[in-house]
Image (cartoon, rainbow, N blue to C red):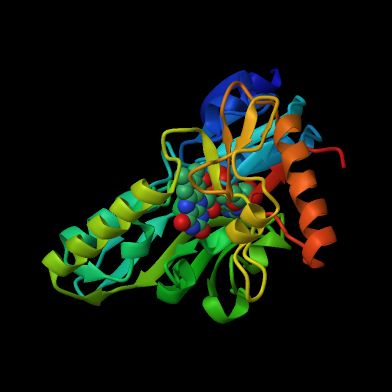
Length: 300
Ligand SMILES: Cc1cc2nc3c(=O)[nH]c(=O)nc-3n(C[C@H](O)[C@H](O)[C@H](O)COP(=O)(O)OP(=O)(O)OC[C@H]3O[C@@H](n4cnc5c(N)ncnc54)[C@H](O)[C@@H]3O)c2cc1C
């Protein structure tokens, strides 16, 4: 049996799939196999198939925090958002959700039940898995604030891990250094609140995003982490890079911490902008600016 046949026993498989179709940046070369596993058992079986065929693999959520290179990836992308996306609520605000669920949907489902704590997430276009990996957040809130446990596949077993074991911080989690671990689900604890207040907060957050972010153009959200005691967008503004264009990529004129795919940008165009910004900010202010967006399939 060839690899496609083996994989398709456990999920939907696309061969030679452009990653540009699966990232919010709309950038990226093709991958050999893009697979939507049907469930956890299938996911684990697919990993075994990858290992026995010496194929590298990587988990994708909604690709909303990724800058994929223009090169081909000779491996398997496992995308959890098609099947592994169930959400369960208990009456006291305990919520267990699979890693592939959309956190925008999760925030709405919580609001419908008058649970507060996820309003910040209502405009973050990723999955719960991606949010737990990144500790996604906004408006001084983050997913770790409402998190209790994460269900993880590691060392050939599925285990619940307590939040204390996961080293959460600003856009940081232990998952970023434990690259073999796969997030399968999370358990959150939300509080009972007033539904109209929750809805009003979500609406005002959404409006603020629409007013301040270039949501009409492909991007991966904020490109750089905010350094201590400074904001990345202000530093970028001060070096005169608001609106700066390289190839098809541009620093957004609306929000300088967004790099947008203005016109069929290549990953190289984006990387050149990133490097120039980092170099100039280092030279001018002595500050190392680190990317919040992750690079995938780069040789260096
Ligand atoms: C318009 C826009 C606005 C945004 N606003 C915000 C914001 O306000 N705050 C914020 O924090 N982010 C924001 N983001 C960035 C992004 O949406 C978040 O980081 C999100 O959490 C990424 O989720 P994802 O499912 O898309 O992950 P992906 O981009 O698919 O993956 C990101 C990383 O997580 C890993 N990963 C994903 N799922 C799993 C899993 N199940 N197990 C192990 N590893 C996994 C991937 O391998 C990859 O390394 C924004 C992005 C856009 C495009």
